[in-house]
Amino acid sequence: MSDELYERWLKEYRTRREGLRQAVMKAGQQMLKIDASTGLEGNWCTAEARRYAQTLRAEFEHPFCLVLWSRQFDEKFFLKITEDQEVDLEKALALLTWKAENFMPRIGRLTARLDQAGYYTMLLWPGCRPDPPPEPLCIEVPEHEMPPDGVSPAREMNMWFYVFTAVIDLAQAIIVETNYSQVLFEELSTLRKRGLGGRILFFDINDELYRDQDDRRWSLVSVGEAVELAAAQPIREKD
Image (tube, rainbow, N blue to C red; front, top):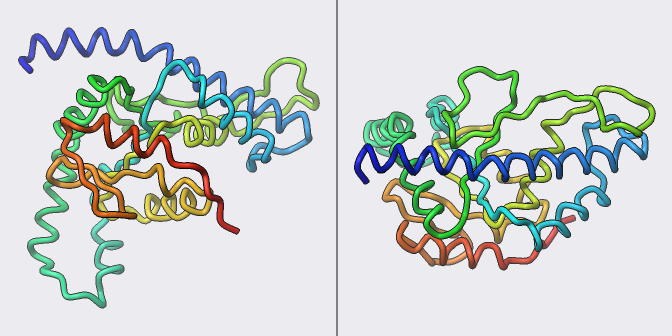
């Protein structure tokens, strides 16, 4: 794709993606309203609020994939989890550093291919944190917000938490590119406990997607097939 063609696509993509941003914010606000009405303080999500998002997913007008991506290589965490393994540290460190430095071209290729297959790419970012990923990849979300009108008592609630929870349940698939981030590893554990392991696709160094549940792999050309399979997986919550 030439630079001129890419700029045209980017401008048009931004315009289209605004509808997605508004829809996910609305879903998060509704989930917040459901829980605020029960007296929750906004740091936990009831089963009722999650069921709302799961029901909304089947008719959601803006199909998208949530992308979880470690832009920075966490060398300390990598050394911690590989201390009992035989790893060529020099080669591993070089590879993982390269991954961190090539975030933009790799996320750009994934975004373009997902768009061709009919899916938006979504990265969420708490509005108060510095250095967000560049647009149009990132949707910034305010961390705290007053609940919608009519909810009593009126108090500040964690808007980030509800939008992120909504997006997890609304996403057709969750695409993960991990560069050994402890936060991301913990998030993956939480997703599996919530029964969403079947919807997780990993994005590797060769620009291929794969599942950790079987041997299936897809090139970016076939990303639509991979997402379709992940999207069809049911929720299997663990105790």
